[in-house]
Length: 410
Image (cartoon, rainbow, N blue to C red; front, top):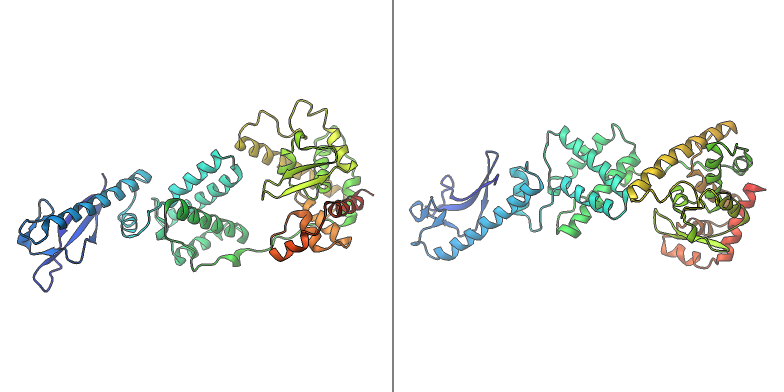
């Protein structure tokens, strides 16, 4: 074992009674730390067995105190073994934090790995990437501080977080920094829940000032009409990218990931239901003829597939494979949309996500209420808002969706 652990008599701390206190001496990489065993654990030099690290039998209650010393040594050794298993390069500081706290010690980089592996194994590849990116950034920051080992959560305080933010600001936007801090906070909470950690980094630390509203890039009614009227060559990739954009708009600003994952079994006679991958909100989309026409167009192409669109197939088995396929396809689709926008002289960055902003904005142009638009997008969160949203029937939502469709295709 890397750590040397031994009960010793501290001769440089002589008490007024002429006795010396008994401490636990822990040595790691030639660095020494002493830990107090108990207030009454002291004796004269002649009453202490240096070789055994015990009180001699002549000391009152020696047996009971020696048993307690044994328990203390075993506790320290267990902590050292756990730290060594997680990270062979742990320091005496890491040991001290683990030994002196009430809960279990948790090493940050190691716990990151545990969470990432769990997310991968449970099919949450997207979240796994967020945690992995944050871990890499955090590890790189540690190296700038000459910390080439793992550290426990207790090593992080407000000053440490400020320094990390300053480090991230050199290459990241405020929203990205916010995401990194939010991910670390989520990791901290997982450690508290799963590992018994009783230290919360963000107890008196707020980073919400870093969050800035993303600039909305909604298209005007004339611009969305121009895109719907754009004529693309059916033999070119651009034609399909245009179809995907139209479909997302027609389906209340559907997310591209959800479009890719849409399966034929989800289609009914009059509508289709799906749960948004991002937040689990359920959507029921009426099959207007414009939506059905696009579905029909791909029916022959995907005849032997479970999917509506020819993006995913059965060969993409794992969540990681599916995510990588969707991410690659998304880049190509957005590249095509950029080209279409340039041809139409639309001076905006048009991406698949613009379909969602545009759907909401068109409804606003047409005089629909904010509450109804929130219901259409699945944004209802506040309890007071939900009271209003519950009053909207499927027929009301259907009528509202049809207005947005007619605005684009008429």
